[in-house]
Length: 220
Length: 80
Image 1 (cartoon, rainbow over the protein chains, first blue to last red):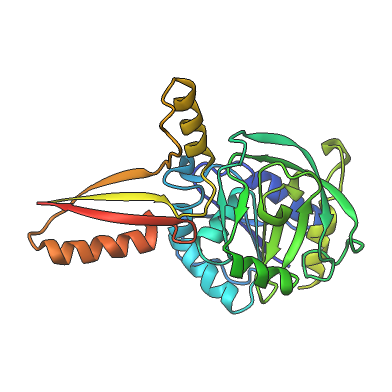
Image 2: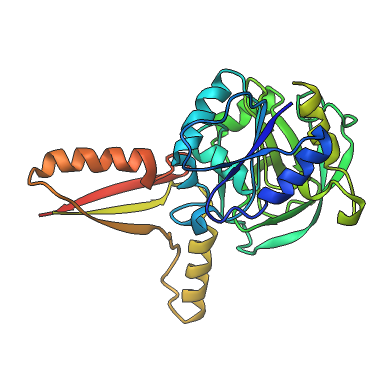
């Protein structure tokens, strides 16, 4: 099992992601710089970390999503490679067109930074198998642009297909349908605004995030 | 040659910044303001002489990077 974490200029949760992946897989991930044009051979799972890539210039995640490595990751994800994005990573995945919708400025215009309760909206995905259906977990959130938006047709489609994986219990950012996390149609690409990688150790105040990493790693 | 690209949110997409601007203008006594939409302007300086060809290229730039067409519209103004 070999994982990778992508590093963009101003990623700041890359190390948190690396610690989480090493904890669950027993092996340190390969850290991949965004200017690389190809992932190293033998990567089984890729994490796009949180942060403020390129200072959120233009739109959050916009510039990072056009970087050379993302082109390669997108092509490999279409062939089945599991890819997860947390926070800025989720923004990068939507900007890259790997997940539907967009993440807009929080409805109340405030940066929110706090532990957030979520319900597992679909426990039957590769990323949520370790959770009981409709169970509640607490992950930290820390974002200014986490307001999930998709047009009506897209929203209906992802709801009908069970692609909403997590919902906020008390919506912190105005996201439509309280959406906190979604998967793509094939189920291998996942994104969420909250930070499961910051909930993997008792020192973090909880370990609810471990289930997510275990779910996807065991599915590979 | 220059191109001005105006990028703004599509109708129906909530614009909390615009709404806050409108409310603040109302507070200042500008009661006639019923709505504000906040967007951005990107001024591009371009090589070349053919405005029509340039506009086609700028459209491509909008589609590929400058606007997120899930939530945003754009408008291009060429300046010779």
